[in-house]
Length: 315
Ligand SMILES: C[S@@+](CC[C@H](N)C(=O)[O-])C[C@H]1O[C@@H](n2cnc3c(N)ncnc32)[C@H](O)[C@@H]1O
Image 1: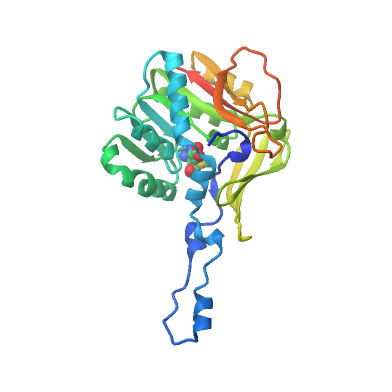
Image 2: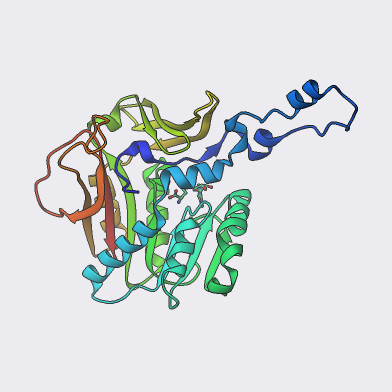
């Protein structure tokens, strides 16, 4: 899946729990007329049959592509093979698992605050691969602002998660920590979006095989750049999961990130810009991103409706 526009992105607050979605009261088996019994066994709406993390992973993430991209960029920047990944704000740690499964020499440290999300990731992404992963992957429930554990070649903060930090001081603390957690030639990749659409309310739908993924940018404050974004899912039977995930963010600009990265001691900052397809291949009126990134550092770039970028901080 090529990731392209902000409409393909995730979130922070789970408004609706898996448990709530699935709660069914077990009825005592009784002698009831066949018709009534059949009615009772009617399938629940599709919205209640899906797991929120599964919906999220399949709608938003592309771990294999990300691993390929990070390896390629790191090799280009540093001239060697990256082996240790730190995945900050890892959620279900799908990226870390894909990283380790892609090469026996690799290891990963995946960090997130949220216990239940990590538990889901352990069950679905680690345990099924336990033999292949061995002890190469660590899941840590902690704040990314805490001192780093180990040293990574690459630290990735995907899907704009660092926008949770709404003040310059907090973001600077995070970037300092991230820098300390890197090897001497390590690279921090910060994924961020921007463009004309990013500063207005917007709803964008993307049809997937089994559901429609809906990205809503509910508000954007031009003074603070605080933005409220949400993810909803719509299903073919008409059922919906509204506010499946919500983000309360500050949308950081590229120059702000650039300046802060340098301020905390990164020696260089590079901007990798996602290439956009030349034609609207799926006919939805939008030229999607191709999943390929170009180093545009120091080059003139035109403003467009929506773009995805990796800012790379070189330690
Ligand atoms: C939008 S999800 C990102 C999931 C995944 N990284 C991705 O790319 O799709 C953001 C995650 O950040 C976590 N998070 C928020 N603040 C954090 C903090 N200060 N330290 C660690 N994790 C945090 C949340 O628990 C949530 O799982």
